[in-house]
Image (cartoon, rainbow, N blue to C red):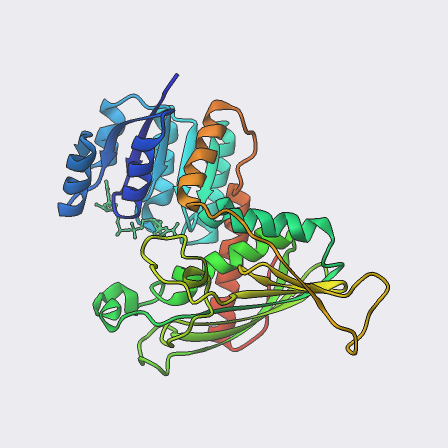
Length: 347
Ligand SMILES: NC(=O)c1ccc[n+]([C@@H]2O[C@H](COP(=O)([O-])OP(=O)(O)OC[C@H]3O[C@@H](n4cnc5c(N)ncnc54)[C@H](O)[C@@H]3O)[C@@H](O)[C@H]2O)c1
């Protein structure tokens, strides 16, 4: 049985729509969006286009939907889908702009018994799935610390778009949110406190261009993270992994380092350093072990996971509403800490 599926929003959503057409279990019956890009995508995929998703919901019976609308529309579009009887929703990240809206989305999906998958797609990357299992396996010993970097240069023209220069358009909400979610997912730890120092000295815009963050996890370990989108740097996950067609060249550097009592791992290069059995200490040679993984397209894999949820083959979303909310809370705490220049505790 094929799943009657629609995609709302056709910028980021165009990738989901194209993947849906290629997925034998999904029947892409309609899309929603407006403007030239939406018209082009609908024509390319030969699928009916609706300018207003509410009209689509009235006219087209659906089993499942992907919402890739601007964040400010996430609550109302989720409500509209539930009212139309849809019980399988893939909602793009961030779950919402605010904690209140995220809580509303979680509560309404729970009330209606709907499955909600939040589109933190890196959770479906073979690299992150491996990393999560590797940390769980205990080969690092007890995790004591993590260092992360997202150093990259966005083109000057990127900041000609006005909303990119205003609150919400900076690298924390656009890029760091992925790195935060990766930390939450792979370590399984809970960030309880952050301190962030933010600068806009590269461009002088209202929003940050470079931020340093110190995290404390409830379970003990600490992490440091530096992000800048105005520095030519190879140490960022997007370039390192090249999982997105937009990034065509990989410098082959790591973006994350995990430190444990038995060894340490550079990610995504997957180089693990530890001592031979019975040896320990800085005078001893470290043994390097390299893990080779098959690369996948995490967004395609995320949609496959969504199909598994729709069909009941899988029961638990890789990123639940609560997971999306936990990530949003950390990003909000970083923004608050940077603004108030104070340590911020997370509930
Ligand atoms: N997972 C990722 O890596 C990733 C990357 C980019 C964006 N996103 C998320 O995807 C979502 C969309 O982001 P974007 O950059 O594509 O936004 P965008 O503003 O570029 O595109 C929004 C789309 O929604 C359509 N739209 C807006 N209002 C509508 C309405 N009332 N009815 C029907 N269509 C409507 C627009 O026509 C457009 O096609 C956001 O939540 C964003 O955070 C996720």
